[in-house]
Image (tube, one colour):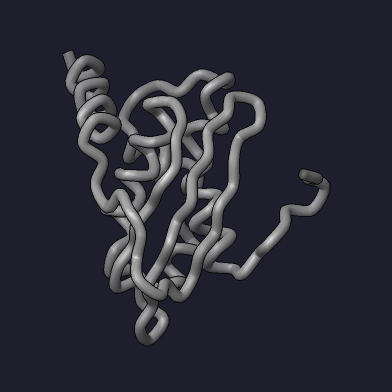
Length: 130
């Protein structure tokens, strides 16, 4: 029953998200949405000596996108921006611990995309228009 336990983990993070809210005077702020399903996430980071000292997220969307944001914010606290830049898709999927369908992949990876964009200082993704 590992899958059921993993689904409970996703639901728990969706219903009781960690690090939800806003930071006072964040150093990095990045927000994006997934137009195909309506997910919207904003991530705010406090940085000290290139290390994430605090992180918050806000937004709305499906259980996968919101749980992924909650899980990711827990994972990156205390990490350097260089470590965040190394964080890859597979690590995010491993953290979620459930099989993600092709249709839900953008939901599962939206928070990671936003955090990495913030770490790299990207304001727009090439080829994506509003």
